Image (cartoon, rainbow, N blue to C red):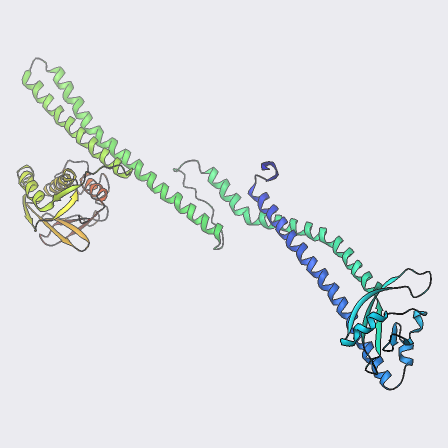
Length: 449
């Protein structure tokens, strides 16, 4: 069965179109033939009715010659005796006595076999018998069906010859239509195959119109654009990560070389190893941050949800982070319970504190509250705020402010980690500058418990 079905979509569509149109055409031609047959029968019946009306009108005027002059007519008495007959009948009768008696209730139509002359082949005759209106007399008029049946046979021959030709023409037309309709798909396929990597600036050709194929082409082209942007971002991430890793590695190698050269000076060796240790810790933090972001992008960042009092946690972190960052951290708000990962929330607060300290802020305020949309944590500081050109992309990875505005030597992953952790909790994060302290404001929203 699989061999009978073409593998090409174009061939399958052409086959379905050909079979479907053939069936429709056959049904339509069959209905046309039946309609023509009925029209011919109706024309014969109308002719018989007209002739009968004319003959009955003549009979009422006591004129039976009209019956005798008719091509095929006969007048019967109530007992079945022929009173007047057409000359072409040659003594034959159109109706039997039992048929004549059945006409008393009204007109009767029938088909009989009649051989007008001896030795001739009987032919089918359409009869109309109706009361003549005089003492139970019955008039029968007939019409040979040879002409009608011949016309029907000719129509059948014409349809039998025309049907295959029409089916073939429709199949060819269907194939051409399918080919024309799928031509844009072929072009899109060839162009897509030619685009080997996302580095290419080539795009899919635009398809004119607003049909399904045009929308598909636009959608695929938009997808390629988004993939190219994502690829560029990932490549920038790798480049930035390589740059960030290169500096501490170079410092570590230099310090280790100094330590090896100063093996006779224990103090110099200790200073070199301490510096190398700090760079190793920096590398560890950078690796952990990049791993966290990679898990968040893959949807695999795990959060251990448990009831947490955000206000109490903020107070604890303020006491721990204040001396480390040299920033005075105020906490305001009533107790708010939320299902969250306490360790990840501490990481968020630590990154925000480090960001404020790097910007030169001296005071930070944490406001915890709940509203109809969930739980809100607002971190505000009195630093210079986010640069206007950085405000829209501060959450991106490896984004750092102007060195003249910050003393940070970090990798620029702090706010990216904040957004990643908040997103993993099903929340959101926003940035702005201004009140309440005039500097940067980071608003974190989490779902209510």
